Image 1 (cartoon, rainbow, N blue to C red):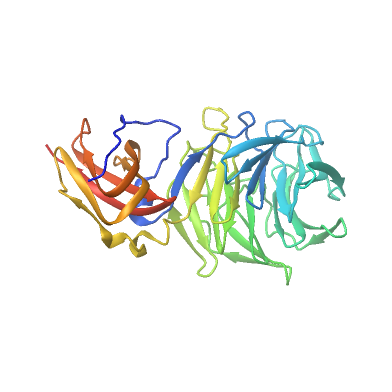
Image 2 (cartoon, rainbow, N blue to C red):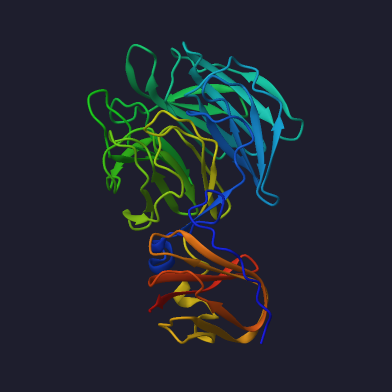
Amino acid sequence: MLTTMKMKNKIFTSTVILLLYYGLTNGQGTWIQKADFGGGARMEAVGFSIGNKGYIATGSYTQDLWEWDQSTNTWTQMASFPGTARESAVGFSIGTKGYICMGADPTTKNDLWEWDQSTNTWSQMASLPVTGRMVAVGFSIGTKGYIGTGDDGSSFHQDFWEWDQTTNTWTQKADFPGIRYAAIGFSIGTKGYIGTGNSGSAYQNDFWEWDQTTNTWTQKASFGGTARQETVGFSIGTKGYIGTGIDPHFKQDFWEWDQSTNTWTQKANFGGIARLGAVGFSIGGKGYIGTGRDSACINYKDFWEFTPRLENGIDNYEFKDKISIFPNPFSSETTLTTDFNLSDAILTVYNSYGKQVKQITNINGQSIILYRYNLESGLYFISLIQDKRIIKTGKLIITE
Protein backbone atom coordinates (compact mmCIF):
# COMPACT_ATOMS: atom_id res chain seq x y z
CA MET A 1 0.00 0.00 0.00
CA LEU A 2 1.41 3.39 -0.89
CA THR A 3 1.27 6.62 1.10
CA THR A 4 -1.18 9.17 -0.25
CA MET A 5 -0.97 12.92 -0.13
CA LYS A 6 -4.36 14.49 0.54
CA MET A 7 -5.05 17.93 -0.78
CA LYS A 8 -7.94 20.30 -0.20
CA ASN A 9 -10.40 20.62 -3.04
CA LYS A 10 -9.51 23.28 -5.61
CA ILE A 11 -12.82 24.31 -7.07
CA PHE A 12 -13.19 26.62 -10.06
CA THR A 13 -9.70 28.11 -9.90
CA SER A 14 -8.22 29.73 -12.99
CA THR A 15 -4.70 28.39 -12.71
CA VAL A 16 -5.24 24.64 -12.47
CA ILE A 17 -5.30 22.08 -15.24
CA LEU A 18 -8.70 21.94 -16.94
CA LEU A 19 -9.46 18.69 -18.76
CA LEU A 20 -12.94 19.00 -20.20
CA TYR A 21 -15.46 16.18 -19.99
CA TYR A 22 -15.52 15.55 -23.73
CA GLY A 23 -11.75 15.46 -23.87
CA LEU A 24 -11.68 12.71 -21.26
CA THR A 25 -14.47 10.57 -22.67
CA ASN A 26 -14.39 11.02 -26.44
CA GLY A 27 -10.73 11.72 -27.22
CA GLN A 28 -11.57 15.30 -28.25
CA GLY A 29 -8.34 16.72 -26.90
CA THR A 30 -7.39 18.52 -23.72
CA TRP A 31 -6.60 22.10 -22.71
CA ILE A 32 -4.05 22.93 -20.03
CA GLN A 33 -3.47 26.47 -18.79
CA LYS A 34 0.18 27.52 -18.94
CA ALA A 35 2.02 30.56 -17.53
CA ASP A 36 0.27 33.82 -18.40
CA PHE A 37 1.68 35.79 -21.32
CA GLY A 38 4.57 37.93 -20.07
CA GLY A 39 3.30 41.20 -21.52
CA GLY A 40 0.12 43.06 -20.68
CA ALA A 41 -3.38 41.91 -21.57
CA ARG A 42 -4.21 42.69 -25.19
CA MET A 43 -6.10 41.79 -28.34
CA GLU A 44 -5.19 41.41 -32.03
CA ALA A 45 -1.53 40.62 -31.36
CA VAL A 46 0.56 38.39 -33.65
CA GLY A 47 2.03 35.00 -32.87
CA PHE A 48 4.47 32.56 -34.46
CA SER A 49 6.77 29.74 -33.38
CA ILE A 50 10.41 28.85 -34.03
CA GLY A 51 11.60 25.46 -32.84
CA ASN A 52 10.34 24.86 -29.29
CA LYS A 53 9.74 28.57 -28.67
CA GLY A 54 6.56 30.54 -29.19
CA TYR A 55 6.35 34.30 -29.72
CA ILE A 56 3.67 36.94 -29.16
CA ALA A 57 4.13 40.58 -30.14
CA THR A 58 2.28 43.86 -30.72
CA GLY A 59 -1.50 44.03 -30.24
CA SER A 60 -3.54 46.79 -28.60
CA TYR A 61 -1.05 49.36 -29.96
CA THR A 62 2.08 47.90 -28.35
CA GLN A 63 5.58 47.03 -29.63
CA ASP A 64 6.88 44.44 -27.19
CA LEU A 65 7.96 40.92 -28.23
CA TRP A 66 7.91 38.00 -25.82
CA GLU A 67 9.34 34.48 -26.11
CA TRP A 68 7.74 31.45 -24.46
CA ASP A 69 9.91 28.39 -23.80
CA GLN A 70 7.92 25.18 -24.11
CA SER A 71 10.42 23.21 -22.01
CA THR A 72 10.35 25.58 -19.00
CA ASN A 73 6.94 27.27 -19.39
CA THR A 74 8.52 30.68 -18.93
CA TRP A 75 8.24 34.01 -20.78
CA THR A 76 11.24 36.23 -21.63
CA GLN A 77 11.00 39.69 -23.13
CA MET A 78 12.98 40.11 -26.35
CA ALA A 79 13.93 43.16 -28.44
CA SER A 80 10.86 45.28 -29.08
CA PHE A 81 9.34 45.49 -32.54
CA PRO A 82 10.90 48.60 -34.17
CA GLY A 83 7.88 49.52 -36.27
CA THR A 84 5.14 51.71 -34.86
CA ALA A 85 3.03 50.37 -32.00
CA ARG A 86 0.09 48.58 -33.61
CA GLU A 87 -2.58 45.91 -33.64
CA SER A 88 -4.22 43.70 -36.29
CA ALA A 89 -0.88 42.86 -37.96
CA VAL A 90 0.19 39.54 -39.54
CA GLY A 91 2.88 37.22 -38.15
CA PHE A 92 4.63 34.13 -39.51
CA SER A 93 8.02 32.42 -39.31
CA ILE A 94 10.50 30.99 -41.83
CA GLY A 95 13.38 28.95 -40.41
CA THR A 96 14.89 30.84 -37.48
CA LYS A 97 13.34 34.17 -38.49
CA GLY A 98 10.05 35.67 -37.39
CA TYR A 99 8.09 38.24 -39.39
CA ILE A 100 5.55 40.96 -38.61
CA CYS A 101 3.81 42.78 -41.43
CA MET A 102 1.13 45.45 -41.84
CA GLY A 103 -1.47 46.21 -39.15
CA ALA A 104 -2.81 49.53 -37.89
CA ASP A 105 -1.28 52.23 -35.66
CA PRO A 106 -4.24 53.21 -36.06
CA THR A 107 -3.64 54.09 -39.74
CA THR A 108 -3.04 50.99 -41.84
CA LYS A 109 0.56 49.94 -42.56
CA ASN A 110 2.31 47.93 -45.31
CA ASP A 111 5.79 47.49 -43.77
CA LEU A 112 7.50 44.11 -43.22
CA TRP A 113 9.99 43.43 -40.42
CA GLU A 114 12.23 40.42 -39.80
CA TRP A 115 13.35 39.25 -36.36
CA ASP A 116 16.45 37.01 -36.09
CA GLN A 117 16.18 34.50 -33.25
CA SER A 118 19.95 33.96 -33.12
CA THR A 119 20.83 37.65 -32.63
CA ASN A 120 17.56 39.04 -31.19
CA THR A 121 17.68 41.85 -33.75
CA TRP A 122 15.17 43.36 -36.18
CA SER A 123 15.65 44.32 -39.84
CA GLN A 124 13.20 46.10 -42.13
CA MET A 125 12.42 44.22 -45.33
CA ALA A 126 10.64 45.20 -48.55
CA SER A 127 7.18 46.61 -47.87
CA LEU A 128 4.13 44.93 -49.32
CA PRO A 129 3.49 46.78 -52.63
CA VAL A 130 -0.10 47.69 -51.84
CA THR A 131 -1.95 50.08 -49.57
CA GLY A 132 -1.67 49.36 -45.86
CA ARG A 133 -3.77 46.53 -44.47
CA MET A 134 -5.11 45.34 -41.14
CA VAL A 135 -6.84 42.08 -40.09
CA ALA A 136 -5.30 40.28 -43.08
CA VAL A 137 -4.16 36.65 -43.28
CA GLY A 138 -0.60 35.35 -43.25
CA PHE A 139 1.30 32.04 -43.19
CA SER A 140 4.48 30.51 -44.61
CA ILE A 141 5.34 27.58 -46.87
CA GLY A 142 9.01 26.66 -47.10
CA THR A 143 11.08 29.82 -47.66
CA LYS A 144 8.08 31.85 -48.79
CA GLY A 145 5.69 34.00 -46.77
CA TYR A 146 2.11 34.65 -47.86
CA ILE A 147 -0.25 37.52 -47.06
CA GLY A 148 -3.70 38.26 -48.41
CA THR A 149 -7.13 39.82 -47.96
CA GLY A 150 -7.66 42.46 -45.23
CA ASP A 151 -8.99 45.96 -44.69
CA ASP A 152 -7.13 49.11 -45.81
CA GLY A 153 -9.38 51.41 -43.80
CA SER A 154 -11.76 52.18 -46.65
CA SER A 155 -12.28 48.90 -48.51
CA PHE A 156 -11.85 45.14 -48.17
CA HIS A 157 -9.61 43.03 -50.40
CA GLN A 158 -9.03 39.60 -51.92
CA ASP A 159 -5.49 39.92 -53.33
CA PHE A 160 -2.86 37.39 -52.28
CA TRP A 161 0.91 37.95 -52.21
CA GLU A 162 4.07 35.84 -51.93
CA TRP A 163 7.26 37.11 -50.27
CA ASP A 164 10.53 35.32 -51.12
CA GLN A 165 12.96 35.24 -48.19
CA THR A 166 15.96 34.62 -50.47
CA THR A 167 15.34 37.64 -52.73
CA ASN A 168 13.28 39.91 -50.44
CA THR A 169 10.75 40.43 -53.23
CA TRP A 170 6.96 40.31 -53.47
CA THR A 171 4.99 38.57 -56.23
CA GLN A 172 1.23 38.74 -56.63
CA LYS A 173 -0.48 35.36 -56.84
CA ALA A 174 -4.02 34.28 -57.71
CA ASP A 175 -6.63 36.26 -55.79
CA PHE A 176 -8.44 34.62 -52.91
CA PRO A 177 -11.94 33.74 -54.21
CA GLY A 178 -13.84 36.48 -52.40
CA ILE A 179 -13.58 39.77 -50.54
CA ARG A 180 -12.51 39.07 -46.98
CA TYR A 181 -11.15 40.51 -43.74
CA ALA A 182 -10.59 39.15 -40.21
CA ALA A 183 -10.22 35.61 -41.61
CA ILE A 184 -7.70 33.00 -40.47
CA GLY A 185 -4.92 31.19 -42.33
CA PHE A 186 -2.40 28.39 -41.86
CA SER A 187 -0.40 25.97 -44.00
CA ILE A 188 -0.03 22.20 -44.23
CA GLY A 189 2.82 20.98 -46.43
CA THR A 190 2.74 22.86 -49.75
CA LYS A 191 -0.88 23.95 -49.27
CA GLY A 192 -2.14 27.13 -47.69
CA TYR A 193 -5.61 27.57 -46.17
CA ILE A 194 -7.87 30.54 -45.55
CA GLY A 195 -11.29 30.35 -43.92
CA THR A 196 -14.00 32.18 -41.97
CA GLY A 197 -13.87 36.00 -41.71
CA ASN A 198 -16.20 38.70 -42.98
CA SER A 199 -17.03 39.50 -46.60
CA GLY A 200 -18.02 43.05 -45.74
CA SER A 201 -21.68 42.17 -45.55
CA ALA A 202 -21.80 38.94 -43.55
CA TYR A 203 -19.80 36.50 -41.44
CA GLN A 204 -18.43 33.56 -43.44
CA ASN A 205 -17.62 29.89 -42.79
CA ASP A 206 -16.17 28.88 -46.17
CA PHE A 207 -12.73 27.26 -46.27
CA TRP A 208 -10.28 27.34 -49.19
CA GLU A 209 -7.04 25.57 -50.12
CA TRP A 210 -4.27 27.24 -52.13
CA ASP A 211 -1.78 24.98 -53.95
CA GLN A 212 1.73 26.46 -54.06
CA THR A 213 2.71 24.34 -57.08
CA THR A 214 -0.26 25.32 -59.28
CA ASN A 215 -1.23 28.72 -57.81
CA THR A 216 -4.88 27.68 -57.71
CA TRP A 217 -7.63 27.89 -55.09
CA THR A 218 -9.98 24.98 -54.35
CA GLN A 219 -12.96 25.19 -52.06
CA LYS A 220 -12.98 22.57 -49.31
CA ALA A 221 -15.63 21.54 -46.77
CA SER A 222 -16.98 24.59 -44.95
CA PHE A 223 -15.78 25.22 -41.40
CA GLY A 224 -17.78 23.04 -39.00
CA GLY A 225 -18.79 25.85 -36.65
CA THR A 226 -20.95 28.88 -37.27
CA ALA A 227 -19.90 31.61 -39.71
CA ARG A 228 -17.67 34.05 -37.82
CA GLN A 229 -14.65 36.37 -37.80
CA GLU A 230 -11.53 37.03 -35.66
CA THR A 231 -10.93 33.34 -34.98
CA VAL A 232 -7.69 31.56 -34.12
CA GLY A 233 -6.13 28.98 -36.41
CA PHE A 234 -3.01 26.80 -36.68
CA SER A 235 -1.96 23.40 -38.00
CA ILE A 236 -0.49 20.31 -36.36
CA GLY A 237 0.77 17.66 -38.77
CA THR A 238 -1.90 17.10 -41.42
CA LYS A 239 -4.68 18.64 -39.34
CA GLY A 240 -5.86 22.23 -39.21
CA TYR A 241 -7.59 23.85 -36.24
CA ILE A 242 -9.96 26.83 -36.02
CA GLY A 243 -11.85 28.14 -32.99
CA THR A 244 -13.06 31.06 -30.86
CA GLY A 245 -14.14 34.29 -32.64
CA ILE A 246 -17.47 36.11 -32.90
CA ASP A 247 -20.66 35.25 -34.85
CA PRO A 248 -21.83 37.88 -33.39
CA HIS A 249 -21.81 35.95 -30.10
CA PHE A 250 -18.37 35.36 -28.61
CA LYS A 251 -17.33 31.76 -29.24
CA GLN A 252 -15.41 29.11 -27.32
CA ASP A 253 -15.83 26.10 -29.63
CA PHE A 254 -12.84 24.54 -31.36
CA TRP A 255 -12.69 22.42 -34.53
CA GLU A 256 -10.25 20.11 -36.32
CA TRP A 257 -10.00 19.73 -40.10
CA ASP A 258 -8.49 16.54 -41.54
CA GLN A 259 -6.59 17.18 -44.77
CA SER A 260 -6.84 13.54 -45.86
CA THR A 261 -10.64 13.27 -45.50
CA ASN A 262 -11.70 16.93 -45.89
CA THR A 263 -13.88 16.65 -42.79
CA TRP A 264 -14.37 18.77 -39.67
CA THR A 265 -14.63 17.33 -36.15
CA GLN A 266 -15.53 19.32 -33.06
CA LYS A 267 -12.91 19.09 -30.33
CA ALA A 268 -12.94 20.10 -26.67
CA ASN A 269 -13.95 23.73 -26.20
CA PHE A 270 -11.15 26.25 -25.70
CA GLY A 271 -10.14 26.18 -22.03
CA GLY A 272 -10.40 29.92 -21.44
CA ILE A 273 -13.35 32.28 -21.68
CA ALA A 274 -14.98 32.85 -25.09
CA ARG A 275 -13.16 35.58 -27.01
CA LEU A 276 -12.09 37.19 -30.28
CA GLY A 277 -8.79 38.59 -31.48
CA ALA A 278 -6.63 35.97 -29.75
CA VAL A 279 -3.26 34.57 -30.92
CA GLY A 280 -2.63 30.99 -31.99
CA PHE A 281 0.37 28.91 -33.10
CA SER A 282 1.68 25.35 -32.77
CA ILE A 283 4.88 23.78 -31.48
CA GLY A 284 5.37 20.13 -32.36
CA GLY A 285 2.23 18.20 -31.49
CA LYS A 286 0.73 20.96 -29.33
CA GLY A 287 -1.34 24.01 -30.16
CA TYR A 288 -1.40 27.28 -28.20
CA ILE A 289 -3.91 30.11 -27.79
CA GLY A 290 -3.51 33.26 -25.72
CA THR A 291 -4.60 36.87 -25.20
CA GLY A 292 -7.76 38.25 -26.85
CA ARG A 293 -10.89 40.15 -25.77
CA ASP A 294 -14.20 38.93 -24.29
CA SER A 295 -17.77 40.16 -24.70
CA ALA A 296 -17.32 42.68 -21.86
CA CYS A 297 -14.40 44.30 -23.77
CA ILE A 298 -11.93 42.91 -21.24
CA ASN A 299 -8.51 42.00 -22.65
CA TYR A 300 -6.71 38.86 -21.47
CA LYS A 301 -3.18 37.54 -21.13
CA ASP A 302 -3.92 33.90 -20.25
CA PHE A 303 -2.18 31.24 -22.34
CA TRP A 304 -3.42 27.72 -23.05
CA GLU A 305 -1.95 24.52 -24.48
CA PHE A 306 -4.04 22.14 -26.60
CA THR A 307 -3.22 18.46 -27.04
CA PRO A 308 -5.30 17.13 -29.97
CA ARG A 309 -5.83 13.68 -28.50
CA LEU A 310 -4.85 11.79 -25.41
CA GLU A 311 -1.56 9.95 -25.63
CA ASN A 312 -1.82 7.32 -28.39
CA GLY A 313 -5.60 7.41 -27.93
CA ILE A 314 -7.01 6.30 -24.57
CA ASP A 315 -8.53 3.15 -26.02
CA ASN A 316 -5.17 1.95 -27.35
CA TYR A 317 -2.91 2.93 -24.48
CA GLU A 318 -0.81 0.04 -23.18
CA PHE A 319 -1.85 0.54 -19.54
CA LYS A 320 -5.58 0.58 -20.27
CA ASP A 321 -6.39 -2.89 -18.94
CA LYS A 322 -3.80 -2.84 -16.14
CA ILE A 323 -5.59 -0.39 -13.85
CA SER A 324 -8.78 -1.12 -11.88
CA ILE A 325 -11.04 0.97 -9.60
CA PHE A 326 -13.04 -0.79 -6.89
CA PRO A 327 -15.62 -0.28 -5.55
CA ASN A 328 -17.33 1.92 -8.11
CA PRO A 329 -19.90 3.32 -7.31
CA PHE A 330 -18.70 4.09 -3.77
CA SER A 331 -19.90 6.14 -0.81
CA SER A 332 -16.81 6.84 1.33
CA GLU A 333 -13.65 5.60 -0.42
CA THR A 334 -12.43 3.61 -3.41
CA THR A 335 -9.09 2.09 -4.39
CA LEU A 336 -7.25 2.40 -7.69
CA THR A 337 -4.95 -0.59 -8.24
CA THR A 338 -2.30 -1.26 -10.90
CA ASP A 339 -0.15 -4.27 -11.75
CA PHE A 340 2.88 -2.03 -12.38
CA ASN A 341 4.67 0.51 -10.18
CA LEU A 342 3.60 4.12 -10.39
CA SER A 343 6.32 6.74 -10.02
CA ASP A 344 5.52 10.33 -9.05
CA ALA A 345 2.11 10.02 -10.69
CA ILE A 346 -0.77 12.51 -10.37
CA LEU A 347 -4.42 11.58 -9.93
CA THR A 348 -6.94 14.33 -10.73
CA VAL A 349 -10.72 14.25 -10.23
CA TYR A 350 -13.12 16.41 -12.27
CA ASN A 351 -16.81 17.05 -11.86
CA SER A 352 -19.30 16.60 -14.70
CA TYR A 353 -18.58 20.16 -15.93
CA GLY A 354 -14.88 19.39 -16.39
CA LYS A 355 -13.76 21.39 -13.33
CA GLN A 356 -11.00 19.97 -11.13
CA VAL A 357 -12.28 19.18 -7.63
CA LYS A 358 -9.48 17.02 -6.16
CA GLN A 359 -5.87 16.15 -6.91
CA ILE A 360 -3.38 13.73 -5.33
CA THR A 361 0.31 14.06 -6.24
CA ASN A 362 3.56 12.15 -5.60
CA ILE A 363 1.86 8.76 -6.11
CA ASN A 364 4.27 5.82 -5.93
CA GLY A 365 3.60 2.10 -5.76
CA GLN A 366 0.68 0.03 -7.04
CA SER A 367 -2.44 1.40 -5.35
CA ILE A 368 -4.03 4.57 -4.09
CA ILE A 369 -7.03 5.17 -1.87
CA LEU A 370 -9.32 7.95 -2.98
CA TYR A 371 -11.44 9.35 -0.14
CA ARG A 372 -14.76 11.05 -0.76
CA TYR A 373 -14.45 13.72 1.94
CA ASN A 374 -16.97 16.47 1.08
CA LEU A 375 -17.63 15.61 -2.56
CA GLU A 376 -21.34 15.58 -3.41
CA SER A 377 -23.08 12.53 -4.83
CA GLY A 378 -22.90 12.29 -8.60
CA LEU A 379 -20.75 11.53 -11.62
CA TYR A 380 -17.02 12.35 -11.69
CA PHE A 381 -14.10 11.70 -14.03
CA ILE A 382 -10.47 10.91 -13.26
CA SER A 383 -7.19 11.13 -15.08
CA LEU A 384 -3.97 9.46 -13.94
CA ILE A 385 -0.81 11.08 -15.35
CA GLN A 386 2.74 9.78 -15.22
CA ASP A 387 5.76 11.20 -17.08
CA LYS A 388 3.42 13.80 -18.62
CA ARG A 389 1.34 11.02 -20.22
CA ILE A 390 -2.28 10.23 -19.43
CA ILE A 391 -2.24 6.52 -18.62
CA LYS A 392 -5.76 6.12 -17.28
CA THR A 393 -9.09 7.91 -17.48
CA GLY A 394 -12.38 6.73 -16.12
CA LYS A 395 -15.70 7.50 -14.50
CA LEU A 396 -16.49 7.53 -10.78
CA ILE A 397 -19.93 7.50 -9.24
CA ILE A 398 -20.40 8.64 -5.66
CA THR A 399 -23.55 7.55 -3.85
CA GLU A 400 -25.03 8.24 -0.41
